[in-house]
Length: 494
Image (tube, rainbow, N blue to C red; front, top):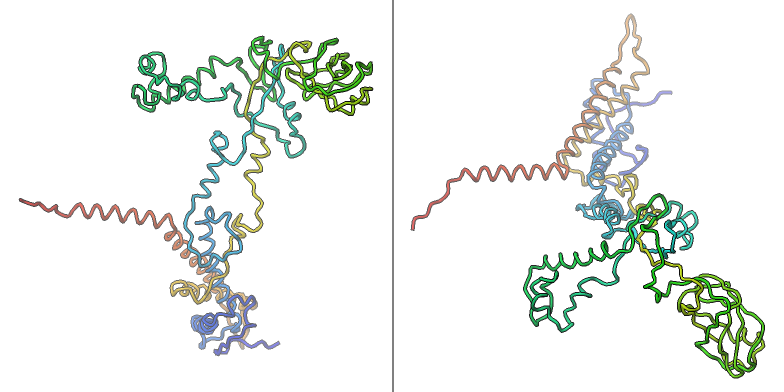
């Protein structure tokens, strides 16, 4: 097949290039014809034939423009990726001015804030153990199960951040109330009793604010350390408290204290419905808000419900627990004319034993939430360099510096193509001799020129990066100051 080679008259055709990235750009099409003539002249035309077609040169030109854009935008991505992450992928960044953002720094510091307990994007939760007399070890796994933290979404478990005794209100509100009418004058204001400088306007000693803060901290630390009931240590999922908890008789009014009901105990009604029939022998469950398992009989006086008698004790009943027996249940037991539900409140005298020993609080995070907080599924946002929305460059906006690089790179590509074409036959026989072709020289020169052009462009981009420009500006400022120091100072004589 006789394939025509370059004839010196390149004519643009949209079908001449494989991708057609720039076919709508009139400047590109005009320069493509000029580049073909430039390349042919540099390769020796018309003194020697160029075994290429115009479309080959147009293709090299299209590749050179695309390579130039790739190098430019790849560098822009490297220089700005931290600021670009999270932005919309629907925006074209080719003509965007990108200003560095503190957002990536904030995202990073959120992790530190979560660990330090001063903020962050991982929620902290509070929990507690009701201590039981003679029981020293308490399981966080049991706490997770009872709190509903089960399933694959909680596979990593929990991480305890702090175990503490903390008063419910700050020292400044409890000890240093400015509205108590005292004013903290005299010895208190002087700080003799350990705290001073507080009060309203009735007499106080002025003290630096840092002293006041230290006093408040001292009071709170005193309660946390010296007045705390327990110390602790954590191994694996077990919290061990010291000393071994014992019953605290001074805390009998705590609503969380309690256990089983006393068999034979009679609990009076606090909500008393009217009902006929004095007493029935049928038993009924005595289920309360906290406790369960006990049974008893209900007694009336012929006109109202008066009390219940405990038959079996049950468990987990607490002080002030309420046992409710509904109107329907009372009717089913044989009472007549029942006007409503009967409610019976449990007192500490109704309990068989009181075995809890206070409460220990702790703060924790769910480790699966810490993992998930660092991963955000955002299909329409920039997440990596592959979906940063840069497009092919607009050729008509590339300046003369960039176009000069593109022309040279197009020539190198055409040299490479011509070398491969001439490499099909290393020599051509002629009468009584043969002609050796220069395919090796062309390929070597093209490879070296392409490498040098890429390195030159990358060096130029490095020298114009944000960091390099800031360093240059700082050096210029320093040089200016040195130069200004050489200027004589003007002396004024009055």
